[in-house]
Image (cartoon, rainbow, N blue to C red; front, side, top):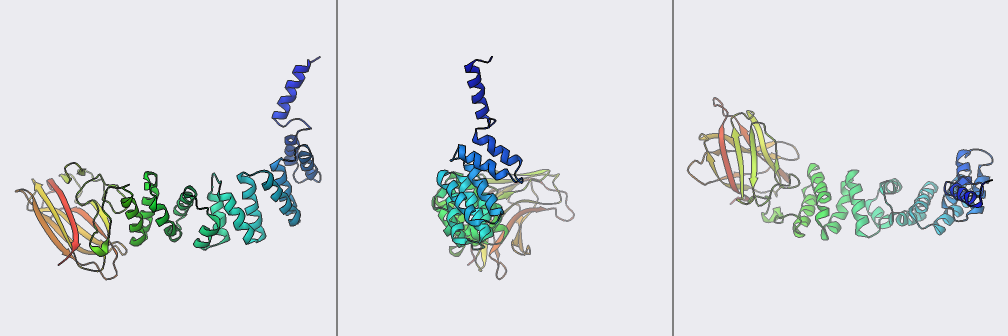
Amino acid sequence: MLGLGVICGWRSVQVAFGLARDDAGYHFRQWEAQENSAHSMEELDRALALDPRYTAAWIAKGLAEETAGDRSRAEANLLHAAQIDKTYLPRWTLANFYFRAGNTAQFWTWARRAAEMAYEPDALFGLCWRASGDASEILERAIPRRLAIRREYFDFLLRTKRWPAAEILVAEIGRSAERSDLDRLLAFCDGEIARHEPGPAIEAWNALVARRVIPYSRLDPGAGAMLTNGDMIAQPLQRGFDWRVASVEGAALSFDSAAHEMTALLGGRQLEFCDFAEQYVAVAEESLRLRYRYRTRDLEAVTGLGFRFLDARTGAEFATAAIPASPDGWGEQAFDLSPPKGCRLIRIILQYRRPAGKMRAEGSAVFNRFFLERAG
């Protein structure tokens, strides 16, 4: 015969794995196995008789009664589950229940309570957008004011490309921006630039500047402060309003932030037409002047290097400027341009184009200052 200790030990194992017939977990699993049978609800009742705080059984009982058309009893059971269990699942279940019932007042109440502790909140945020297409209503009624939750919601809006809704949160997140916010605010900035909406992008960018997350000056097109990293004080972020450097076979573009220099090195094997770097620049409707300080080495008078200026929205090129050789030391060039009417965002591209009748250039150009200012 088995000793009492062995029997008790086996009993503990049975309870732990929900195998014993007088264990709530056992009857819940029996219900799962025969959910559509006539006796399935009896298994839930047995589970709850053994453990009145068995949340999963209360939820299952409520959902089964909803399916059977008894919304009143379903609601009572789901509310009871939420009363005895303050975790996410009962709140999330109630939010879904009231969404299906069309009870918007209760839906917002339980959606907000669920959002307070959602560990993977995308499904909840998506449900809110099914309930309402009003970004302000969702933010006010469903999203708690804790900044960590607001950040999660902001990330959801970016992933689902709800840019106008994300715009509402930029100022709030920007006021307390930290290093951990760099990627999310740059993602927002890039998204708005892609949509040709420089205003919200500048707001996010300037928030990073104000909080010293990025080492640049504020952008203010109306006041003439437009170009970023024109003195090469940092390695480009490759995003937002900073320089975006292309990979060019047979050539290279490098930044030396200690020397405040950007070097374009032409190896003689680069493509006949290639772009080295570009920057998106928000502009006002006025004439502008690009000034830059540079020197060249081993390049002919017609270097093949130059700038292109494009309307970011239409992609139309509205100006070009060649970069002549400056072999005798540092020189300065200036070029005036007028963005098209209605243009609020331009692309400045540093390019190489092989001059007609010439071999591909071999040499370098070093830049240490760029200014974009109002002309006149």
